[in-house]
Every structure is written in structure tokens, then in C-alpha cells.
Length: 124
Image (cartoon, rainbow, N blue to C red; front, side):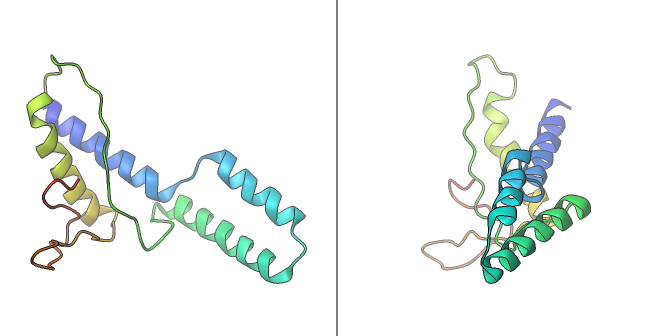
């Protein structure tokens, strides 16, 4: 039960990471657009801001390349899911890759094959 809640939380956080930006970033881009004088740069800033809005409103990734998921966790030695964490994270990344969707970016360095789910040895 706890493991499914943690998996759901990880998927939710991955979705948030690729579909929304902190308000200070969006506001900074808006300020840059207001100050910009070059028409090409203004056009690019508008496109970026439009893309951010579309991603936020439609819960879709802002960028086609969603990167590789890396997790840094600090938990106590008595955390009840300590030994299950690698499997829970792996399952969450596989789910997120399909549901959000995330671009499957991992490639086995020996076999040169992409498993299609953003997982592999020590990834995530």
C-alpha cells in the first residue's frame, strides 16, 4: 500500500517537473520579453512562453526531450520502504514514461539498445 502511494507520488513529481515551471522562471521570461528589442529574440521568447502555457494547461511536457531521471534521496535507516526504493523508483519511471509521456532516452552502452522506458543498470 505504501509502495503504491510512493510510486504515485514519484509519477506526479515527474509530471510536474516536465509540465510546469516555477513562477519566478516564467516571470523572468516575461520580463525579458518586455525588455527585448530584437524582433527575432522577442519571437523566440513568445514561442517559449506559449509553449510553457500549453504544457501547463494541457499537462504535457514542455520539451520533446525530457532528459534522464536522476533521484537523490535522503531517508533514515528505519524508513519502511528502504530496501524497496530502487524497485519503486524504477516502476514509477516506467509508468511515467508511458503515462506522461516521457521521451525514452536511456541506451544500453554495450548493446546499443533503448529499452523504451528510461530504465537500465543504475538508471534511474
